Length: 396
Image (cartoon, rainbow, N blue to C red; front, side):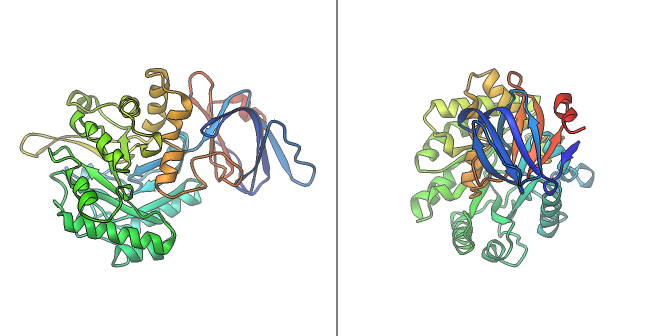
């Protein structure tokens, strides 16, 4: 239920415990024209603004979640056309606390192309979810929209990086080191020309080589490890164990929050648990992100590579993993939040996302203090209230 449009008025949020994501204590936050204008213990906005006040009742105010990997146009298809997932709806993202998404293609770049991906992103942005996209897909040589990775990054504002490029997976194109090096170089230069990070998101499958190709790239080429962001690192213990060495080179890693009971039984490590283990092994929180892999297929194959079952990833897995990290594993809320707010914003080069500070975009969540259940989402300055009757009543 959307109660306040960004153009309607300014919004003063009172009586909150602020995590920015670092804890800042009891604060008031003033939002004007979709941006954070002021943060203080008490704010007097004067009389020049048409203002609505929201008493948050002591709830937690945290940054909106930044999801590093969402198949916004729908993923899947490994079992034929009937197994394709539907596109992501803006309401599903906002109800999951996700205010920023990085959209990507996956296995299927034939029936789901970059034009459709870009259209889905622009539709989400119009509905209040900040959406960016990646050039490329599993396939190498890469598919692009304009004819080259550099042109995609330079000419299309929403294109901020490349991915998912698949390695160590039977569904990938089995790229060589030279092929990956060219992708990384084009992403880096295209990003430089456009003022973007040009990060390359790398889908890592369950084949034994794991991250070895990325280590070789870091050793044999001048491309920095920080330009590669491998995902699905928690798919098994072997891969998770390689994350520390990769981070020591300056590389970052992404953990997948969505899973299935069968995948867990086969050795996948829950994202919240993997996050705690990586931090315990010395990986800095700034080099770790969690993503939902939302709308992606979660296929299961037999020993011969035949599809035996398929499910689809849910975008609300990010918020669920946050609760698990805090409630089940004892991680501080500020640290757990960083992995799904400030860390991905920094890795993808989005300085106004993933934090609550003056000048930042007004993407925020109101969470219940103990349960961390979502009470309301503020996206681009618009307030969306869900199950919190006391918040709805203030705007009746």
